[in-house]
Length: 161
Image (cartoon, rainbow, N blue to C red; front, side, top):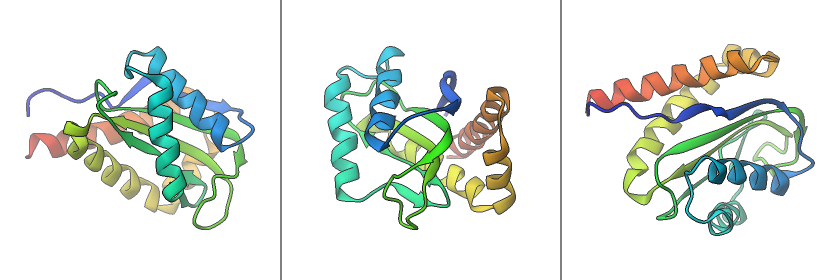
């Protein structure tokens, strides 16, 4: 694959953001995707994400949530990243509050790209020093650097396919 995928764009990465709860968080994230031309129908995609959350929370533990939705409403794989100022209840598996949320929207035909991104992101977050660094970040540029590093790993994986 010659074309590099762009999973994380600076205008979709937010540091120190404040939300009151899970629903407001997801609504704002979906709105940012819509504002950036990624979604055909904001409300319908929000319903896809909320339906997925109703089945089982994507709060994977350790203050992290990775919500996602696959739909024909999505033009290209793209993620919105929130590093919250304060944790919120996300009904995470470990019952801890969540501060780092990556919402990924994917067209149904590009789920392999989403799966590679999820693999690389979870590999990064599995290491305690990476999580500690992440939660200490106060500068958006530093968060962008981390996310672009993960994106580069996904592009290497795609090039090897």
